[in-house]
Every structure is written in C-alpha cells, then in structure tokens.
Length: 369
Image (tube, rainbow, N blue to C red; front, side, top):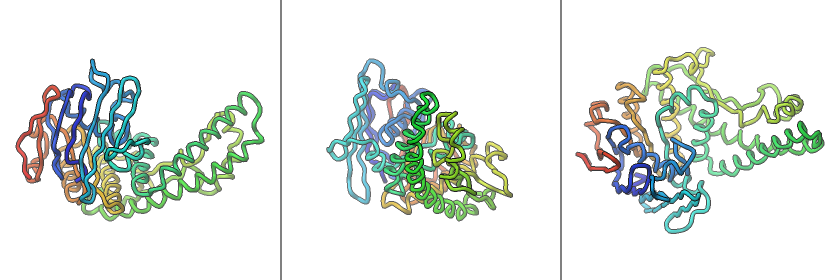
C-alpha cells in the first residue's frame, strides 16, 4: 500500500473529503460531474504537480475559494510518510514531505509514483509520438534514479541550441558557436539515450514474458525503440548534415527529444493497423510491463488511477486488465465508474473499499477487507 489516508479541500466541487483507501483496490462510483474524477485529479496534482485535465491550476480550485490543499498519509516499506500540497490562485506553490518543505516537485513525484489512465489515454498513446515518449519517460524516471538530472541537462542544451539556431536565422550571427552546442548536445543525448535504452530493454523482456498470460493477441509482437536519430550515422554527423535545415526551421530535428517506440509484428507497426480494441490490449501490455518493472526495481508500491474504466474498455478487457493488476504485489488501484454494475462481475471477488460520491460528498459503501 502506498496511500492509506487522503484528504483534500477546494478541489473543483469537493469542498472537503477524507478517505481511507484500501491497500489494494478502491472503487469510487458516481454520476458524471459528481466529483469522482476530481479526486483522481487531486492525486495527480500531489504526485505530478499538474492536473491531467487542464494546464491551469486556477480551474481546479473551487469557485469562491483562493487555494486548494491535498494531503496524503501512507507507508513505504512499513515506514510512514506524510505529504501535503497547496496551490493558490495567486500562483503560490507549497509542498511538504514529513513536515519538511519540499522545494522541487520532482521530490514528490519520486516519492509518490502515480500512474494514471484517464479518458483519452489510449488514443493519445496510439496516435501521438509525444505521448508515447512521455509514457516511457515516466518509467525511466522511476527506475533510473539519475534520469531527472540527465533529462534536465539535455533539455537545457536543447533549448540553448534552438535559441542559437533562431539567432543565426534571424540575426545572421552565432554560427561559430554552433559546434560548441553540438558537442554538448551529443554528449547529453548519449547519456539520455543510454538510460532510456537500458530501461526499454527491461520492459521489452517483461512485455514478451507477459504475452501468453495477458492476451494471445500479443504473441509474436516485439517492442522497438527509436532513438530519434539515424541508425546508420552518428548523431554528430546527422547534426552536421542537418545544419542548414535546422537553421531554417529554427529547431533541432534529430535527437532524443524525437525518440519514440513501436510495436512490431511481421515488420509492421501494429499500433497503426490494429483496431481500437486491439490497440488498447497492446497499450495495456506495455503499461503492465512498465508497472512490473517499477515494482521489481523499487522497494515501494505504485498507485494506479483509472478514471471511468468502463468508458475506456469493454467488459472482457476490463476484467483482463484488473486481473493482471490485482496479481501484482505492490500495486494499489483506485478506479472510478458511474455505477458498480458497469464494472466486470469479477470485481465482487476482490477485497476492496467502495465509495459513492454525489455533489462532492463521499459516502462509504459496502467493502471487503
């Protein structure tokens, strides 16, 4: 179990809530707009510093109030922890871990690994390279513990190189400095790619191992990582060859920021040819491999938030996913649905805690410990 107690105030239509989460499975039911998604949004704010629904925190803060708060109490390896976060309309950010001020959001993110499946998740992963890279980097961040510093350094260099490219394009000077930033770009790119490749190798093996257990459809499918650059040339050669076009575009066209992954069967990218239902099976297979990898590499649990599960998956895929997640020791699940009847029947066989929410008010329902 990661989080035992969750308290929040002034999060959308939730004036105040105090919930005891089940160590394994917590289910929240309620009509659209009742507040069930807002609770998951609060967990996202706490763990990731941002909402999965909007980029503007002001929209999450309840009307006629000036700040929201989220507090969680939990355990990691039987050691208790407390974390709290407040965000205000004025832009103030305050966070604490065990009473100590937390200066950087990534410290909370490292402590609270929260994996969210929200409406639109599957479409984004199947259609958007940036979403796939973001998904992959979630896993690398939580497994390769120097990833954040390497990723931060790379992005600083990328920003500087792009700024220089624009300067050369629009002001006509700075070309002599480009080789310096190219060298830094190649060095930081190599470090970032090495971490991603090491992680990708781990989840690829787990993805392969899970194929028979999760779905026959996954058999014969391989995961392939694309570095964002040429396979046949070094990155430094690619930068040199692309120099003129990079200057014209004012941005760097090749490098780890353009990385991606594909799922390959018979030399075809099956994410592009599969049906929507099959795409969801594929993405769930990747997601399960990532969560397994996290649990194997870390001595702490992972919280998995699934918003409106029945709207994303049909009954058989719901049951398949829940069965796989419930089998993972260390996986704590919070899921929402409009009604309990919309969830697969297998739910009744799991130990769980249930809540029903109306107008931002949560009521405990029947539970099985």
